[in-house]
Image 1 (cartoon, rainbow, N blue to C red):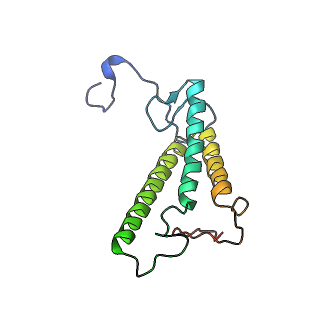
Image 2 (image 1 turned 60 degrees about the horizontal axis):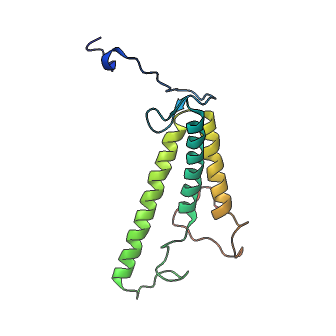
Image 3 (image 1 turned 180 degrees about the horizontal axis):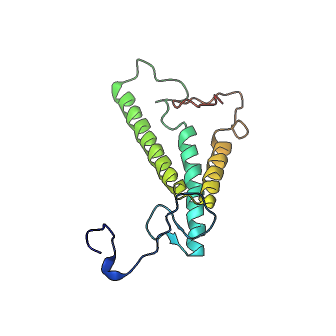
Length: 154
């Protein structure tokens, strides 16, 4: 039909897996058109990808890379401006990467697939356990320095 907005590509009908409520099943599209579709192996790969995406987002949330220009002390007012600027640029790049990956994870969950939701939450939980909890830290008395305030204050 012309003018209806249907994208009918030469009369062939493409099956869409877009859901607007949570469902359980492997037939879905996660992040990209046609991926993983109905293939079992690709669905498992998509779940593994989403899981590790959650772990990476948590790692970036709790990592101390470039928090300070030297050691664990805050940058002094006497440190050279290029060091502070470089530290700020690295912090900004890591923050942008973390936010971008978090949005990608959010879009994966918006596929409304129950399995994707579960592995996303599991990825965040495992990432927090590994990088944010006191159970794994080398020095339990050391409080993590974070520029991103936690809503629960942990």
